[in-house]
Every structure is written in C-alpha cells, then in structure tokens.
Length: 311
Image (cartoon, rainbow, N blue to C red; front, side, top):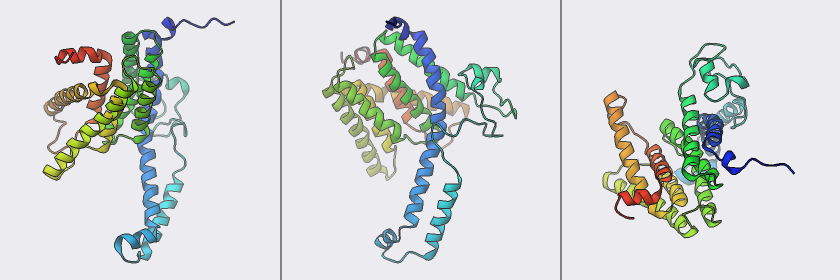
C-alpha cells in the first residue's frame, strides 16, 4: 500500500499557500476572459433580438425595418470571425505582440520577476496586478490553513476565497459580478452546510443567511431607487451577499456589511487623496463585500460578534 502524506503536511499553510499561487495564476485568466466571454454572449443576444421580427412587432406594434436584419447578419458574421474563446483556449499570449507565453514564463510570481515585468518578445510591460493576484491568493490560502488547521474544511474555504478574489477584481474592472461565479458560490455554501461540512453553520442558518443576505440589499436597492430615482447598486451585490450568508450564516450579514462599509470608506478616502476618485465616478460595492466576508471568515464570527457586543 502507498503511504499518503498526512493532512498536517498536505493542508499546511506552506502547501496551501503554494496551491494558492497556482490557483491565483488561473484566476488571472478568469478575471481577464470571463468578462470578454460574457460580452460576446450579450452581443450574441443582440444578434438574436435584431433578427427577431416577431419580437419587434410585439414590442413596437409595427413591422421591423429591413435594415434590422442586415445589421443582425453583419454582427453575427463579425462575432463568428472572432474565433472561439474559453477559459482554456486559446493559450495565453502577449496582448501587444501575440507572443505565446511559455510555461516557464507563466510560473506564478517567479515568471513575472524573471521577466522583470516585461514581455520577453516585445518588451511590453506586464501589469503588476498579475503577480499581486497570485500573491494575494497564496497568502489568503495560507491564512485559511493557519486559521482552520489541517482540516478538509480548509479546502472548502479556499474555494470560497478563490471565487471572492475573482469577483473582487472583475467587479472593480467592469462593475459586473458574473452569475457564473456568484450562483455556484451560493449553491456550494448551501450544499456544504446541508452535508454538515461547515463546522459552525447548519442548513437552516445557511439558508436564512442566503435569504437575509439577498433581501437586505434588495430592500436597500429599492428604497434608494424609489427615493432618488437612481440605482445605488447592482443585482450582483445581492447574490454575492446571499452567497456569503450561505457560507457564514445569517448572523454574519450585518458584520459583513459593516466591515464592507468601513473598508469602502477607507478605500474611498485613499482614492480621494490620490486624486483617482473623480466626482460622480461609480465605485463598485462587491469588492468591499468580499473583503468583509473574508475578514469575518478569518477572524471568526464569534469574535466579530463579541466586538459588537452580541456574543
């Protein structure tokens, strides 16, 4: 029989930190490509709508102009000419010169340092955000291992962390929280709680966490919209907080929102001082919700509730 490595080694902060670096490298692909994949899908929906004469007739009570079909067909051909795009294909390339990234250039952190932050073919600058995402994911995975010890639940929480890192950067870039990440996180939390895999969260508290998380921000959204006529946040924020509630229980909702508000205020002040926060600029709330969720997870809900005087 083969002796397997003990959990103490496999789930140690060092090993999970290394795993986090590798996962962070993949998250960079997700962060870059998933929004592009969604935009292609949305343009495909536009093509279908432009070519749907019955829908035009129902909506506008008139016949669709002939140019609408032509525009839809031209757009369809343009989309088809783009070629396939997924998280796995095509291989990673330099956006400036098309140089295919070699395996040794793609080693987390080390590849970027070895290249000194520039493409080996054309010398174009490689954004420092790539190693930062890798490093942050590695550190958070190591922190989960340190916080929860050599327990299988640490792997579950690392999966949650990976989803939150991807959502944070995507939302910061695009102000979109993709359902392709938020909904699987929500269902994963409910299933993990239902199977008894989460040490302090049962199915009832997980389910109510999802309900309270969604409805709390949904209520704020509609109150703000009815009062001001403006939208203060997107529906993705509701789903993200619902997912965090499913993983951390309904009791975590208020601490997460409070921490998100504090983190957001600090970040806003820092951006104001740096001059990067222009008047009227929209700052997404998703990254701060994710930060609040990570803080509650790593600090521990009982400790946070104790700080609030609710323990």
